[in-house]
Amino acid sequence: MDRRSEMHRRERRRYVIGYGGSLLLTLAMFGVAQVYGIETVGVYLTIGLLGLAQLVLQLVYFLHIDRRRSSREDLHLVLFSTLVLMIMILGTVWVLGNLATRMHMHLM
Image (cartoon, rainbow, N blue to C red; front, top):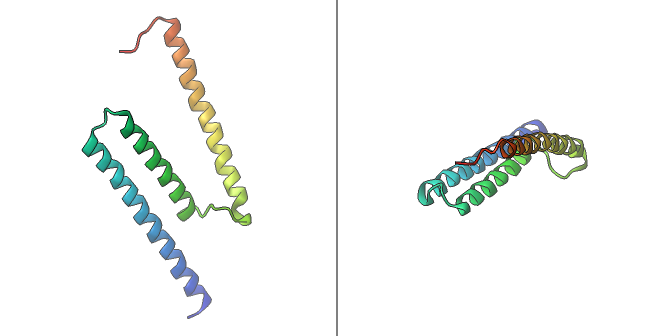
């Protein structure tokens, strides 16, 4: 077996593991919501944690971002993009919440 086919097999195995893990985490999220309902805070926390686990799993298995030296620049790019998105999202929520308070709109 040559080196190229070995690398191809290893890469395919990583994709299958990533797909299986993502599918399992997605089914777990739907299962938690189906069994416990969506009204409780614990369900939101569980879904959020499972979503975070799925994000990490997809970063590692599909985007090949890990702690190696060669992929550190990619990790920095993803973290910076996440920071910019969080600033935009949280800033929008803050501004709209402040506007609703100033206009005396109450949450229903």
